[in-house]
Length: 315
Image (cartoon, rainbow, N blue to C red; front, side, top):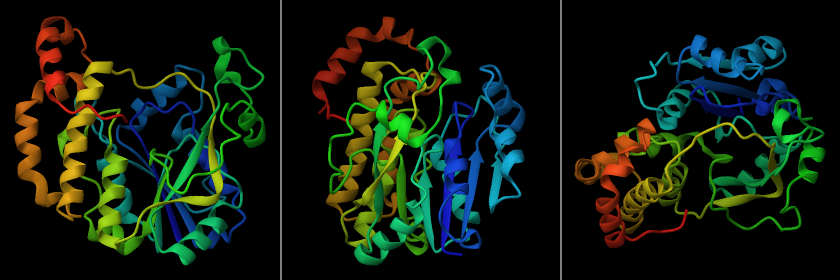
């Protein structure tokens, strides 16, 4: 099998547009598969989507399961277990059959020729491939207060994106929409780092694994030429505290810099550094993971002092 596409969730995603987009690829259906890994139970995941009147991952799976190679895995982690997309993606990596493995956001729209273009990019560049993204700033043919009834269509959603005049760059900062690499590269770097320091809704985990794949391959990651994805409008999702978010991203950036400076692609080699940082800033990560930002009322002065000492880098 040529391609495995892995997507992930933790009972927070509003839509699963990637399912339809993968099903409609202009590509031999025996040569690709979609693996969707949900961290929680099916019951928890179903309840989240059904509260909005939306179809759940299982609902969508039942609709298209016979049309192409599609598997859904539930890890059945309780709500007390922190969200961690790396854990979900690593399970997908373990069971993937494809020669090229692509980690992708589950709520994006892609062109039917996406896989064909991805083939060409890997053949010509032999590099990690990412994907430029356009984000729709409003629901299509719906109001903001009934966004769940918006029309989902690649071209119509694209028309609601404010940045469509920008050319596709050589490389992208946001690695979330796509991280694609040969199978052996993923296993050489050990997949995603599963440390709790990365268990946050807003993180640099995609940047981290891309950086380590770059180090292993000796090649710069590239945006897929001539292709981009469209992210339809939806408002429900993570809500994180801005100051805590900056601190988390800054700490994670230090780990990425260490990997780059030491040309080390194995995340296991930096565990001692992660443990030291985690113990020092455990209160930051616990607040970010739990979403309990009332803590800021009590640590405001401490937070300001720490932020003034840290190198705050833009996301």
